[in-house]
Length: 54
Image (cartoon, rainbow, N blue to C red):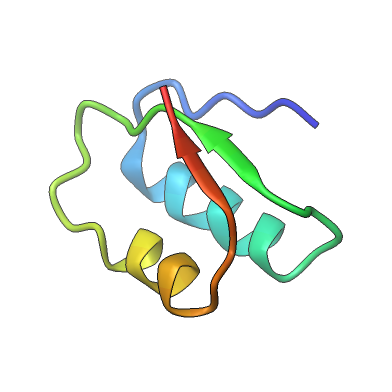
């Protein structure tokens, strides 16, 4: 699956939540330029969910 946030941090949070609670095995992403609060990404890390940044 490929998603685009169009640099919208709220959309980024929704997509991360969708993928974390869905059938994704990992997330490969580039954070939005608007992202300053990374709590939605910390949740992935806490759960041991594979996360790769580019």
